[in-house]
Length: 181
Image 1 (cartoon, rainbow, N blue to C red):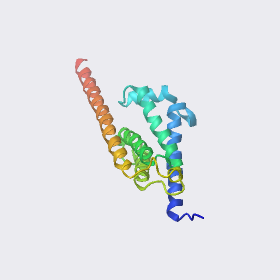
Image 2: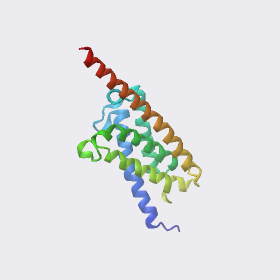
Image 3: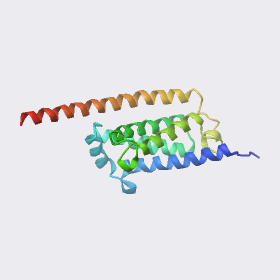
Image 4: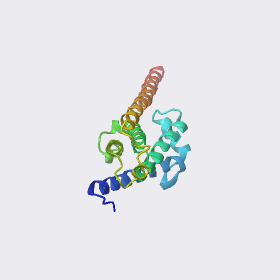
């Protein structure tokens, strides 16, 4: 008989909580569930905050959150799941950063917490109460952790960088139009 220890139970709770919240946020974006706006509304919001094209950005964020969150909760493909969710949360944190840290002021506190928890799970692994463990860790190898986190960091930096360029150009265009009046 296998005995699970506190670490396995703690990782299970962390995976279920973090993964569940991420999956719900993704479902808001993708399907409009739980008071969300679906792909159309989320796409319009994404455009307004500099992520373009909006609908494609909403789809990518929704899939990273819903898919990454579901996989984290199950403890399956944990390095890729954690990295995908962390990347989505880094993109969300970029939107909220101008409002400061605390969520009460619209800050990045919530996105940062979810992203760090997802990245931490990618690094720590899912524990023995997981599908990764049951399947012999075929999609949870040690080399996958730096590969998944590195690839996600590169893509996230590029996407957020392009967003920042769009916002700068938009601000410059608005300033020019003020001088034209």
